[in-house]
Image (cartoon, rainbow, N blue to C red):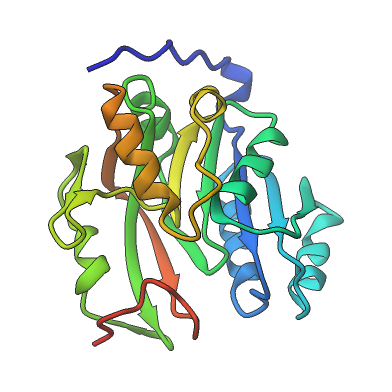
Length: 226
C-alpha cells in the first residue's frame, strides 16, 4: 500500500466540508439533497455544477442560497469527470463529498470519515434504492451496498473495482493530484478506482454512512428494479 500524505485538519474546521452536486433538471429531488447536506454538516460549502438545466432546479437551489454558502457553476460541454473536476477546483475545504442530486443523506459520521481518510483516498457509503417512494430489493448495482465494511471493493457483476460517486468522500489534495478522467461518459468513479489501486492506494466502503437514492426516469443505475 502506498502511503498518502497526512491529513491535517484544524479543530476550528472540524465541521467544515465542501459538497459537489451535479445538476441536470433535478427539480424533483435536489432540494432534498441540499437540505440533507445542511442538516448533517456545520456551514457546508455547496458547489452545484449545472449542465444547462431547463426545469425549476436552479430556482430551488437559489431558494437555499439566501442563507447558505452555495455556488452555482455552469458546464456546457458535460462529462461526469469534467463536471467534477470543475467543482473540485472551486472547493475551499480539505474534505469533499460528491453527492448525487437525487440522494438524501440519512446517516452520517464526519469524524469517522476524517479518521478513515488518513489512510484511504476515498470513502463511499451505503445507498438505499427508493423507487417511487418504495424501498426495493438490493439487486444488480444495489447489491454492492451491504452491511459490512470493506476495503478496495471489487464488483463481481462488473468484474472490476467498485466505487460509487452518488455518495463518496474524498480528500481535495488527492483529487487535485489524481483528477477524474474527462473522456468517459459514465462510470468515471470505477475507472478512477482502477487507476488509484494501480498506484497502490486504498479506498473504503462504510455501511455507517447512508443515503436514500431516489429513482429518476433516465437513471443509469436502475437496471433490475424489483
